[in-house]
Amino acid sequence: MSGAGSSVLEIRGAALHRSGRELWSGLDLDVAPGEFLAVLGPSGSGKTTLLRSILGLQPLSAGSIRVGGGLRQAQAPRRGDRRIGYVPQQRPLPPDTSMRARDLVALGVNGSRFGLPIPHRGDRARVDSLLEGVGAAHYADRPVGLLSGGEQQRLRVGQALADDPTLLLCDEPLSGLDLANQRGITGIIDRQRRQGAGVLFVTHDVNPILGLVDRILYIAGGRFVLGTPDEVLQSRVLTELYGTAVFVLRAGDRLVVVGAPDAEGTHAHEHSDDGPSHQGAHA
Image 1 (cartoon, rainbow, N blue to C red):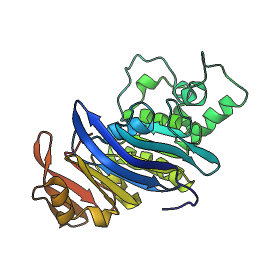
Image 2: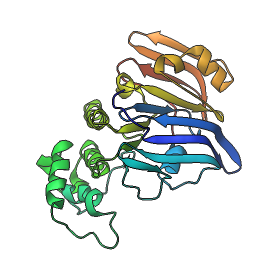
Image 3: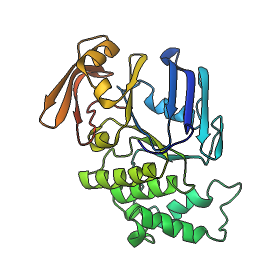
Image 4: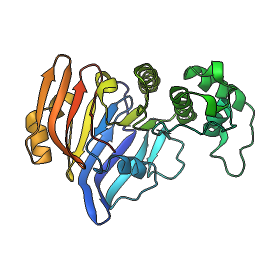
């Protein structure tokens, strides 16, 4: 963890219900500048819903969320909050999409202004800087529909970083990417973290990020546990969380979690010391 100062995210007494079911309650969480927090758990546990609440898209059932820190005053989240960057799961754009790569990144620079996006002085330079920063400058003028999934995802990260956010929310951003692109995207996100942004990283495959993670929020069965990877990824802790026998086994440089129930049954989940993996647990 790096950085200093007040929290970039403060959650107090938070609870979420969906379809009459309590996803979790009593969540208190502070994310510091430069902290990398992984959010793990089985399908339907409320990981993505938590991100939606932080984005101001889903009201809490109880409690409060405040975003801020540093020189920006902490406030309740709101839709379109430019203090927050959001990186979604990679989904291929249609091949006939005519928008250029730079146009997709430009939406992060001017797309949230009222009315139609109107170029402002300095916008092109900012877009060029973002493209360079995510390693996309060499295909800046190509149609996005002709780019690979990894190339498209770099553009989404560039869009999320347009306002130099103090908080970066990542919702399974590595899903569907090969190892090289996973490393590239992770490196870009980590660079933003080292510059002081707090990161919440929802993932079902924790291997690519474990070496970066400061703490883990593990949600399951309407409960959660919060701590360092060493504190959370233990047989005793996960057994208590799930309410059934769960075993964390070491296999070389990997941690394998066996017996954790998911919405579709019981799966084996893996975690690696050089990057987390949570196979079979989906948001």
